Length: 134
Image (tube, rainbow, N blue to C red; front, side, top):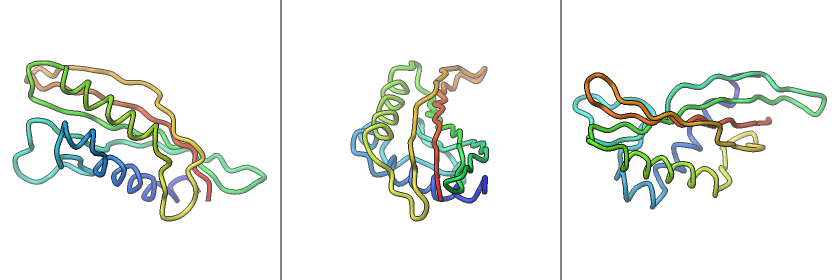
């Protein structure tokens, strides 16, 4: 069961983030499921790594998904990244995601980390946990 709903969760998160007006005002159309070919914009959101654990029980099949969403930028400050991170958190907290199959029981913010690479790029990784049922 564990990966049965990974694709629908990623699609639901992508649809919600790419359609969110507040996030769009900050990053434009630059929400990605995978890195685009060619040059990347100065500020973008990338839906990233996911780990899944089976959480089936007597009531049926289910799984817990730990999902990372990153905000990345070449900006000299973390301010715009923090604004985008807040918009992501708000978009995922305020809306019930509607997957094409299964049901998202809950989606919770777990943690975030802001870091700077040696090349000067800034990044905020947001961690979310979702509980899904078939």
